[in-house]
Length: 161
Image (cartoon, rainbow, N blue to C red):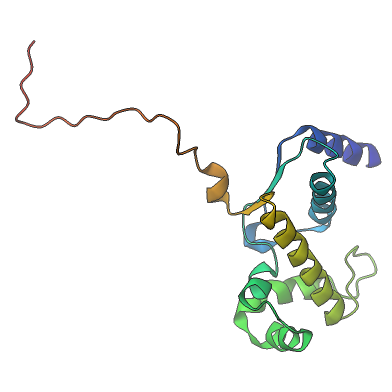
């Protein structure tokens, strides 16, 4: 397993971008490790890696971005009462007090602190132009390239055969 991970990190080092596919804003343990590695590589210019793309909004990102001063108390209340926190609640429940779970949150505060830390890293990378959220941004073409000229044919046009 260790050789596989080293090989993956080696491939990341040779890449320009790292794409994180996170449907329903879910990131698992390995993605967390890989995101940490990619963040370190970008911030310390230790590889050719330049940019991280998330296909969807990362878990908790929208909660902190819509309320920059989101306190633990407000987060805790919303975690159990606000339907828009369902992904966060599901993730927390899945990863709470499990001895076999690497995340293994022991309380809501640990989870809140983890999400807030991730949000801070994302903001830092975004501010430097090294992180983009949304698959549509990955697929956007360079708008400065030449486009083929398209002509339409009307009934008034005459053609010689």
